[in-house]
Image (spheres, one colour):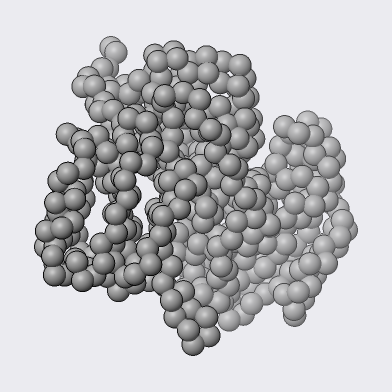
Length: 491
């Protein structure tokens, strides 16, 4: 029996690497009640998604830009969207023919292992457009097949990724397959006692690519750590080196083909290693030309060891500031009526020694608008073509003394308009003026704090991409919004 709400997909990414070139997609259009997209991912994917999946020279005919990609959402057919492969979906948009950002990677919007501060969200896709250098680590846990693994990137330590493992619970080992950002630090934790034996596979690493990992173990654990190369076709394994204990974290940098170091932090219960590829790799191969490079850890655990979750002690000690190692590509100019408008809204407090200041701006396709005084900045974008049609600022004195002024302004905005707002300084967060946010799509019951960023819509329906962000210190919305803004047809 064919179900009316089954998601329609033109190409379905699974495992990989998958390469899609020179394809034209026709008449893929999502309906209200039926997800439809030209590109998507296998439903209920327990396996993996390869970061080398890529697309080039794709064309779309009668496909709204909102229906080019869909990463899924919890609900019918997608279930909880919480299987390991669902969480790690990714592909490379080589020429920007899908996203308008050549060289970008399209990722699931909440995968903080591969996000960075400049990623641009695409709410209709439930995804984000990012840049970076990515690979994978296969983490095999022996004699402990039923553990849940938690992996955390040090620069987003409040956003861990939980993986259940890709294999059946009846196997003698379990395998976790996260996609990671190279040249970054991570920690790994477990919901029970750490495995006695771990094998870390460097997958899709080019020569000299590296990450640093801190693995949680009970205090009193001793280790035997070596490196090897596994020849998958020959089914042979060759030992290549040994890791020796060091009393200094800096020694991890001294990684040689036959020798490396590990560092045990007794305060946090973390075992630190630097995983660095020693050999060249062919472009779309998973492993090096010599074979699969691996690190094997055998742990002698103390008796009656407790749960191996060190997150509370690891952070903020090992927290890092989020950074952008690979700059975001510049958006291609619009060549079709159906295209993205790039919106960036930020408002935050800055501190330099004893000096404090506030920084805030709105950017529409690279054109910036800022506010000189404390208050609210409003920018109006035409929902038909994405052009800025008006801007207005409202000082605190206006918001407090004449709140009807901003209400009248919003009432006079034409229908089918994208309305972007941001606050600067200690703006008047309470008062009658804030009702205009509800007129533009904000959910009722919100409470504004010192900082606000808002992307709303003046029209006959509420688009999925309407967003309100408010915080005491900093707010940020980076979005690629579709124009023309069109309501989905009903199923």
